[in-house]
Amino acid sequence: MLNFRYHALSLVAVFLSLVIGLLLGVAIGDKGLVSSAEQDVRASLRDDVREAQGQRDDAVDHLQERQQFEAEAYPALVSGRLAGRRIALIELGGPSDRMWNLTKDALEGSGARLTSVSVIREPLQTDELAAAARGTRYEQLVESPDLLHPFATRIGIQFTQGGRLLRLVRRALLQQGSGALNGADGVVIVRNTPQLEGADADAVDTFEDGLVRGLRAQDLPVVGVETTDAETSQVEWFKDHELSSVDDLDDPIGRAAVVFALAGERGSFGVKATADGGRLPPLLQ
Image (tube, rainbow, N blue to C red; front, top):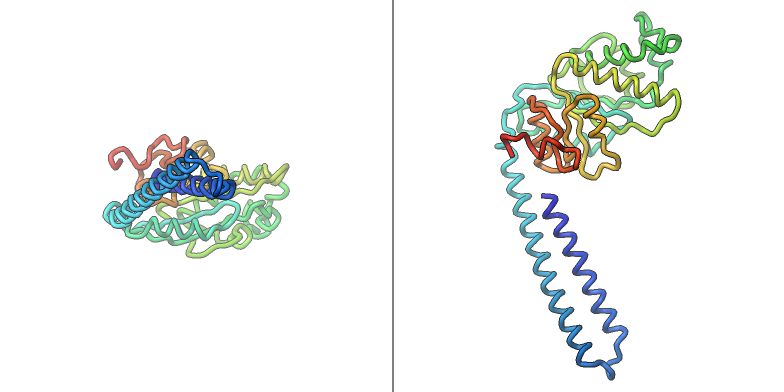
């Protein structure tokens, strides 16, 4: 779909350039001194404009046809592939209504339910986490920074299994959250980690590494996602943490890839150079 979109935009740009050239020619020329050569150039420009208009209209028609086909084919492509599964969406560093809506759209018709949305607060409020974890060994998080990684791993496990520690620290850990944190059968991760320095950056790196380790501990599918227009791609980070990924969640094919990744397909899917898995798993391309 992107090829059609870019093609249409390029045609519009050509069209505008031709129109501007035509207008400049009219503005600069003197009616009494216009040569036949200038008239020929103007006529040629008009022909080019008409041709560009036709190509633009054809590209728009093709784009609309493809969008309609994808919208109609999507339900059949993903129907029932995640029947009964509970999916958790975890956003690292900041909330995004767009990513929430796109994830929800991806699951539509698959049989899965988006049962929780959790936005991890970054930078971490370690003192608040320690206070919330009172009565557990993690109440020493401030005095013993080495506890942060195992703490994050335990939190990751409890995102997929449920557990007391996650319930205790929920308010301190999450910037925003909705749904029941009593387990999940698959996880979608969005990473919007802010630019941090020093101890804050080290703490976030340690926490995120431990969190992913815990999420993967039960061998459940964990999929990192982003859109084609993401300012900074996180695919390499997902790869470094051995996660499947989809880099074009804003495209119907990308949303289908998320469903198949949550069903157990492994790879980096999408349209960017880092997508070594193609648009969809090999048997579906």
